[in-house]
Image 1: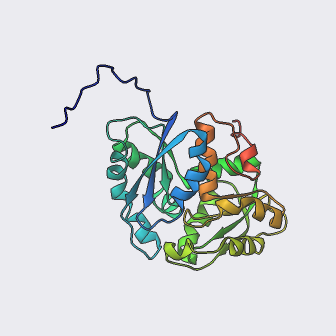
Image 2: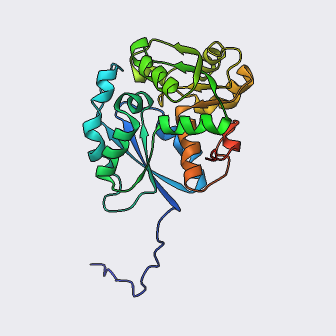
Image 3: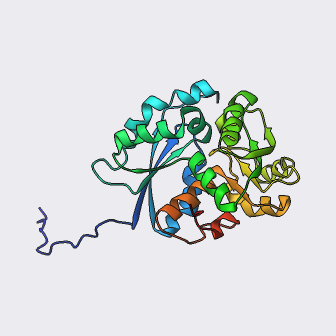
Length: 255
């Protein structure tokens, strides 16, 4: 029988395997978020640690709000008993329907004191970094699911020049919208005079074609995952450009 030796040398341990630790709460049906963040965050020394939260289509305000009771449990499953620098909640429409404050409160029940980033908080920060006041918005959702988002932007002081929805109700199909179609749809969703375009939904693969969309529409563009990646890096103190596009050249707005 082969003798198994115990090393007499004690391993040297890093404080962390990677410089930053960021959790991601993704929908059970999500195809896009982890891929986007692996491209934009991981190369910047950000460890991305994801968990999935129960979710069932169709995408409606009711099904989106139904995720709220699961948020604390999902957050607690990410590296239990270890600190995270931030947790990203991977659903734009749910952040609107549940409310950013309620999302942050629930996640901090599972990860006390953690920085919480949602597509809504990141998008608002991105629009303010642009200095945008008049915006156009493109969502894949139905009118009923888009309405709370329109109300939120107006409550935050933005003028909605145009708000276009695709009337889809399955986030798995939203993830299948081709990049070329995203560019084409975005070009038709911008009103003259808008300062910026927001493409909503973490399922939509817009983050990978931001520069193409900006070239097509002639104004700054941000999407849900793109804004979250930018906001995460800036809040962690990283001023690098994690992807092409105007927003990645900017810091956080002051004041």
